[in-house]
Length: 387
Ligand code: MG
Image 1 (cartoon, rainbow, N blue to C red):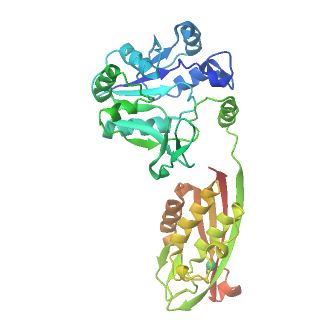
Image 2 (cartoon, rainbow, N blue to C red):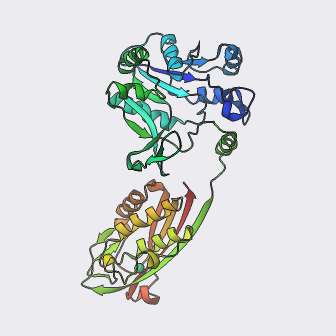
Image 3 (tube, rainbow, N blue to C red):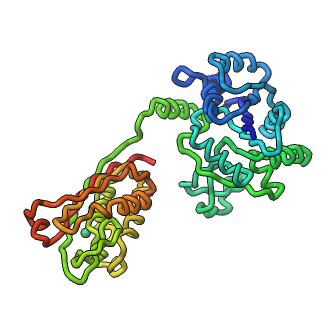
């Protein structure tokens, strides 16, 4: 089974205000087309670059600057994307039905190995894989006078990227048949959809931008240079009193103990500190503001649910948790055995790797209210980054 890549490099780049094709532009010392080809170093068995005839020589030179570990063929582009893809397919050699065809816009030169792997995995499982990002904006469908016709539900709306991957046995016959329909398809998956062949979306990447407008170049440069997006830090602190007849729940994990924490909700002091740190980082106030203890809707509520809500709040504000460090101050009971479970809960609910979460427990050597077993306190710091 081979992975064949069709790299579309024939775009005119008219929106780029550049005199040359955008894929020939240099980004941090390397041409866009070269970056796009290199992205497939660990994934491709061969590649066809579809480009304009008068640019083939330039592209050949850029590609041959240092050898790629797979053969690269060239063919000329058509009048439409669809025609170019078809030319690419015809230029492929030794294609078996079980092979995978990856069709990629050379203007998306920041595509990474992980994304390409997700596409390939999806093709192996389902016969297709196209990367997509869930729509975060509201979209309007308008008529030609820009009068709004309706607002589509964005919950199932994805912004589609490339590479679009397909099983050759499914895509090649469909692409050949599509050429006879006279319909112009704006993306490759659209061809399968036309023939009612299922298409799967896999997780795309916000860094996999298509160089279209001049400002995309500076964005691409900052991504390449690894310039961090805005990062902010927040801290949180909380205390709850220990009492009989209550459950002891810390970071969403019920700890067997004869005392529990008193509070309006489930009194998960550690998650409360974490939520305050998250809100603090985004200048969104504190949990008392968003989930007031005067509201009956939060009576005995699981703080894990509040954590989900808090995560939504910071997402809406444009942020995502990068990492967090939580300290639980309790004289008793021993919390160490429960920390792996707590890490799972927090990382799962925040959708970040376990390696981005740290939870530790300490005693106070019998000093203070924690030491006297009157209560448990928790501290949290949390960094967030722009999404
Ligand atoms: Mg609290």
